[in-house]
Amino acid sequence: SQKIEQNSEALNIQEGKTATLTCNYTNYSPAYLQWYRQDPGRGPVFLLLIRENEKEKRKERLKVTFDTTLKQSLFHITASQPADSATYLCARANNAGNMLTFGGGTRLMVKP
Amino acid sequence: GAGVSQSPSNKVTEKGKDVELRCDPISGHTALYWYRQSLGQGLEFLIYFQGNSAPDKSGLPSDRFSAERTGGSVSTLTIQRTQQEDSAVYLCASSLVAAYTDTQYFGPGTRLTVL
Image (cartoon, rainbow over all chains, first blue to last red; front, side):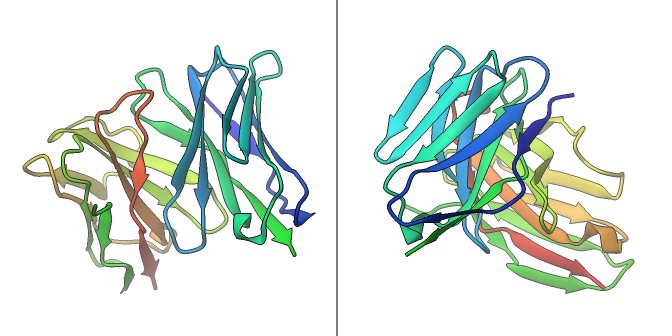
């Protein structure tokens, strides 16, 4: 079965630094990976999607990479701000693209 | 515009009771999904609808769980004879269609507590 693994330990960084979060998956490479942000008491919010044939995707201060050899995606936030503090979730779809399997999420804390 | 809404936001019930959770998707979205998130856990897929049909019910954890969607819009997730292990946040999401590249928009969730 498909599995998505994220570091369950919280990541604490200083404001202004780059935060890097890791998502590892098993079995076959998904056609794409999605990254979501979740704040306490709220549903996840979509951030970025990266396809398997894309090495890198950027959106403002966010950057996602996809390495099918390592079976890994990295999520970077540059010039991090306290407002970036949240839990970040990685997800992959099944073959039909109608079901997402989520990782457990990594909590990011950006300290001023 | 209006996002995905869910009701109630919180539900406390006694073990053995039935509960109904409601989801109002974004207007025009044909695909609707239900997930469950237990404390400290990732999201667990339960079921999805394309229109009114639910082609994949494999994620429902037991036959106490059922869901329906009428009119291609509102969906209800029903849990019969609730157990304490059913306590979790139940999240609903919708997307234009059920496809790889479609973004899923999530509601705020219903926090269910079974005493």
